[in-house]
Length: 72
Image (cartoon, rainbow, N blue to C red; front, top):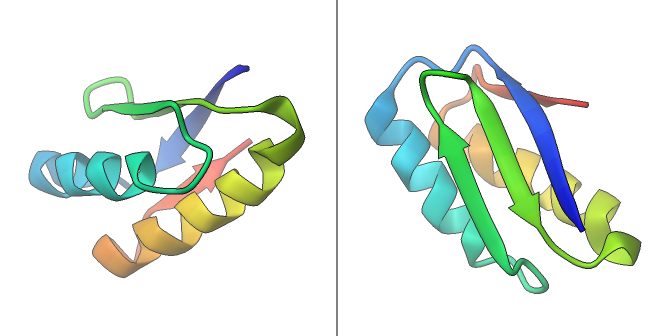
């Protein structure tokens, strides 16, 4: 399943690249990409694990850029 989330307060393209890498490492994630310009996160993962993965992605993003939030 492919899911697109809006990112709020993502201020740094370098941070976006770091976030993309750590999200891709979450167990079950097939692929993850962040568009800094569009402020969007796209995750491909099994539907039954998507909420768990989104929560872990949000936690990891906060570690890199504390003001950033995943919406949706």
